[in-house]
Image (cartoon, rainbow, N blue to C red; front, top):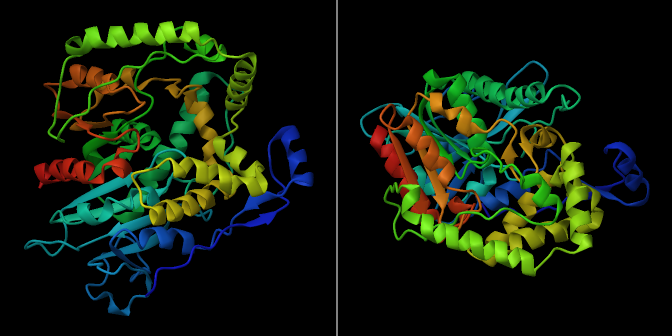
Length: 446
């Protein structure tokens, strides 16, 4: 079957927005994607080395048919030898579902059914399609089933109305938002019939996966946190500095030449870090932010506190929204032109679908991606093996993972990887090294 041609969203007047901003819809067309259109996602997955088929069984908890010839092929690549199913898994009686990619029983030893399950959860502003460079290689680990999901209200999962608790206490606001995601993941696990899983979460997905492992440790065989947000506490003056147009000095690390697990104490790099922070502080004094920059940042912070999400900006941009996404994905120089085109179309579609749980991010994080309830204060009680992965040029501070390891080392097994030549999207930027690291953690269980 030929690779599906991308089909781009249509334009509509848009009837739902937030507050006074709904006036934009009367004069400026807003993006409106068709939820039933899978062609854009399939165009991306066709470049992943997978043969994507329709479900061969109506019960997602049952393994697929051994012979997929009777299933409808939705997308395939020239050399595809791995069968994957796209499922919309119902999680309640209200019509909500979790969009799922399932790769089951492609590599087996003597067992009739794979013994282990890897569940991948995506980060904010992305979806399961962002792992298209990882699925094929990970599926080569024998006796493992691979699942990847779109969080409820994100990607191509259902989009229920999300009601923030912004008017209540901060603890209530955070607890409500976290429960929305954690409990929907648990409902999905039950519907899929997965007893235990290795839970691998990227960025926002890492934050939520960690919370899931804290609440349901009996269901998690291993926790893999890939550049997770929300671990460290914010600096006391961070929000003031941000409103003034500055950001805090961030710790950076030299790239690693391999994905061999590394753990280095913070003291080893203290001198280099202090020198870099001093350099950044001096640069900030020489390059005082303009008044316009301060106003823009202040407005963005106020919108964030009111639960406006970046996707709202994309929707409101109307016919310019595609240019915004093209600019963002266009910076992914590690992808081919064809891959950037497919990923840009996919990112655009999942961004302009009706708004839902994306607004929960403002309930969970403060401006600057610092958690309102930092994980550093909560992961000390984790009881499952925990692995951290960061890119060598990651904007997420790897020392947060180090601090957690210090607290739990000796009680549970831990590892920390630093993936070379990669930033925050390490699974996309250096898939070979990322895949090797994750596959090694999977084989350690097998």
